[in-house]
Length: 533
Image (cartoon, rainbow, N blue to C red; front, side, top):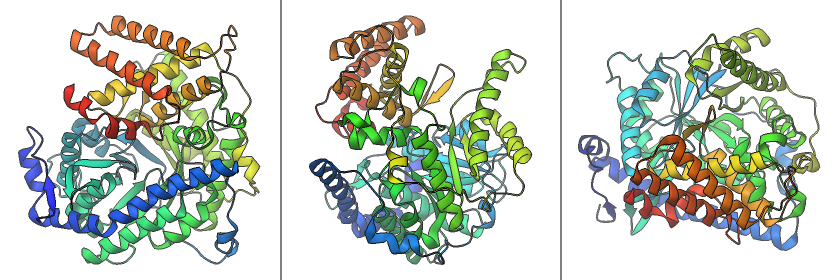
């Protein structure tokens, strides 16, 4: 324990802190960190090396010849899907467990599962991490009156932070603990056995995995944990989110290295689309058009990615799930707007069902029932493992950018989402509502990525031919900031925070080199700001 330094409890959470961070739990996280900290470093170094290699050679990712034997072997399958994961029709997404009321409401719903989120929909303040993990601990152990037992509640799909995040409040051997190891370690130590014994887990979502080597590290962590906690091999199951273009070329390999622990793969849209700017945004052939008008899952590069994911998963006996519907239902069920939202979500999700997905997510809990009905009307059985798309997806299919330009509306929308996400982050929140949708770090990523790329390539607006420049973006950011202040009648302190968010947004989109993740930028380079506000 001499090697561990731990911050004081967050104010008001002394009881929760002491319940979670017991001497044995601290020792477990310290051992986990000591075992895998160097491997986490290698993950981040390998990402940098891969990016440098692609840039120096001006090359494109492709299906590797080194792992062709895995793809060509038709005999292997992932381990059987557990009983409680057989039906994944509708999960509730972006459920930050520190938001107790929403978390409990989700547990009372008819959803198949809940994405219990420490990543895209969560701001990882120490307060949020401790409160969120403690809320999960209470739910799993049946300590909240009125909630169903964990064996009857929607399945908890626990999503720890991604590799790029660190936990500032715990040091092991003089170094901050990797964020995902802190979250995962506490969750497994306090709930792993109970979840296993109730046939309700432990089940995880793994965010922002870029290669099969990263998936293999997670598999090693799972095996280590199972041995430490005396759980049977393969007790832990994980769904990998394919959120990066590089990972789309390694989906079979990712399933292969997680064979005993795989709960399938997930495809989304905005983190995945943003990854093209992350890896290739400086190249003109990867100029991504206005997402508000020209980018959706029906576009060839995204439809190819989804088809390949479904085909890969189902051939190997794994479940394939789709992304999250971000639209929010109006309160008036009789309104035309309500019917319009239902129609829009139905169209989007029916497209995914017809592509063969086994499930997807919604943010609005009131969308669970109509989307479950959609599955019942258009599929038979708990999943679509029997649906294997007869497609042959090539390198060019996955890399072909859609045609289209940039609109003034799209530019202003991206600026607003970027500023409002940073403002939410400074408040200690990981998502917010804007224009009838929930926005989180995934939409913030694509928003700031597009603005950075459009400035970089000096694109012209469709509306009036103006070039997207630093000056134009700065002027529009000021307009957005003034509108938000006037619209919400913000008090002085909140106005000051919004102004800081706008300044940070401009800082990010004007960087000479693309900052890899907006969350890393805010969590590492501007840690002091959350305490200021």
